[in-house]
Length: 319
Length: 294
Image (cartoon, rainbow over all chains, first blue to last red; front, side, top):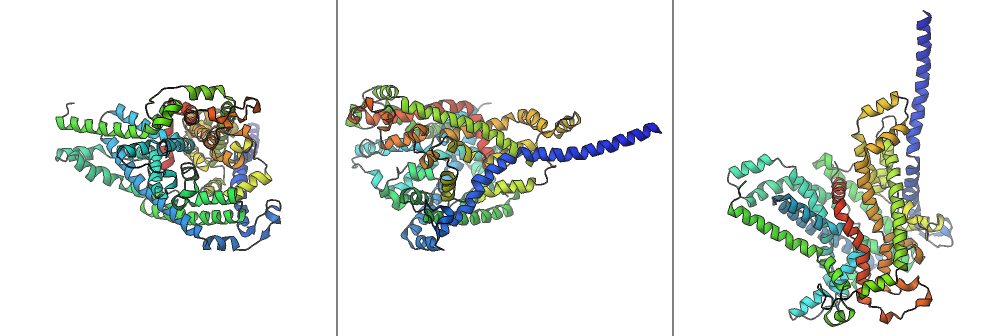
């Protein structure tokens, strides 16, 4: 009797201890993420509040709250300026080139890598092709300069040997969509082809065997098995990059062009414009307004593309 | 297994194709090295050559005789890269762990709190004003580190890994009287070395290549990152000497400027390229995880 009483008391005590323990555990878990949450709040959410700068005539000495409200003036001014059309067109057009040619190149390289028998050679080639991914745009710009330099550059030397006169590439905007596309592919083709290569590795090998028995050659196997199996991956990645089509890779456009104004007609994109308006022109309000527009349009586009992806293939959606 | 002649031929063609492609891809690297090893005179005469017409180490001699600017940038970059890597991995793991625990009621909300920042941002101007006017982080080494410590993408990558850790371990730690802290620091972190190493390497490389932060926030020449110094040198070679003080003012005409620039690029890019193949396995894993959500 006495024994059972004591166990009952004990169990009650234990329970109490457990409840306290649970609360304490919760607190410990929350405390783990307290600093990270604070950092995200400070560096990601606080600036969102700063969007009000877009509606002000920002003066550095007056600060955010002291500066005068101007309503939609910044937006009006930008949307009416010729820059609006130019940078929107450049951003969309160049990103379209990158997505289209980039996908074609990555899929081709992935498929061809998959056809290689020697795994050693495959690894070696992959290593070389991935390397540019870890080179900064600053160094890439040096490389581009070594090739494109009007006086000493490699490309002009090659042209000269064919009897074509030297071209001053840094004052020839019409050449830059191609130069930028090649540079973008150079940097990304290795890593993106790995994704497609991995996709091909996931295909049931029985399919290829059956095709071989039926007398299909390599080419037919690529057309009828490899590519159709990659299709959903291609569509998914393309849709996701379309979601980001209003965002430009700042380094590519700023470093490679060496920020030469003569090239702006074809190379000035939203991100370089925002940077220049802020740092060179010093028009904070205007720069913030363009940034705000980009964020909003980008946000809507990403949400739409993700809903699309979710419909086609729920497990590939980001959310 | 015996291959038919046809198969052998197609394999040979494939290899040939990739050899050509890879040569094209590394050609710009080789060109940089070639120019840096050429004499300045030969460049004036023949332009940039892959294989120098006249070999010379003058450019490297110049770079290593005036090392203070580049050494300082190396030091600054190494300090912030390592600090950011360590802090970032630790804090992101601390963020990811509670997201996997059922006890944390707000875990969905917290995930969304992180996720939303990937979809929408305040943009450049508000961030710039926050950092310069309110936090005064500009022209300090912290600006390289603090604002980018938590990357939601990596947090989710780490979370995915944590979710697959066996629950039994946690139960047994609990029975032994251990708390969540014990579980996290003594078990979760050691067990998650693969994913944490991948993330650490990616962060380190991103930091090593960082020029953008310096472009925005650094004016103090002694705090320039390596990549930013390199970018500035493209426009102004004198920067190499600027930290030497005016005592050793060499007239810029004597500098083998074309080759020195390229030698600088080789000195900056070299270490990363030499080290990279050893870690490629991790990079590829990290990047494929990052691209196709598992």
